[in-house]
Length: 131
Image (tube, rainbow, N blue to C red; front, side, top):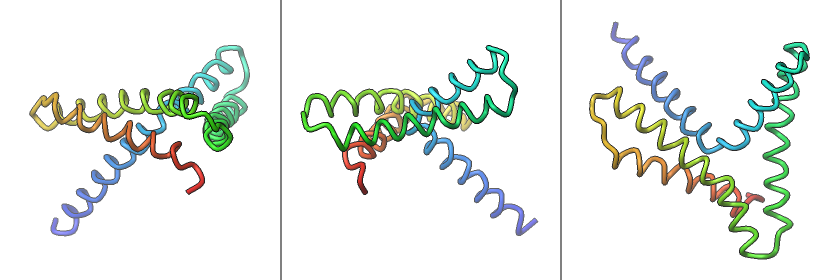
């Protein structure tokens, strides 16, 4: 019993970290899921559909980073960052809102802060893509 409680807290903490980390990658994850499920709907076998989804996920990340490095215009870079940061902010807001309601307090302010932080992390990933 003494060892299970800390291990449970570590597991729950890692789950929360993984959910917010995936929220910052909302656009690539959405594109990968759409490509994978779309190819499965077209009748492609499950394993190639998974490979197509993973390739689309990695392709969106690679294209976003390449575009962030190659774009020299500030408005164009701002639009690219917004394309990645807005879905991340929405996903972070949704995750935080769900956790807040599970914890027993439905705090809109907590969800707004978490959404803003998720969007900021996604924007930072493209603002300095080389690091």
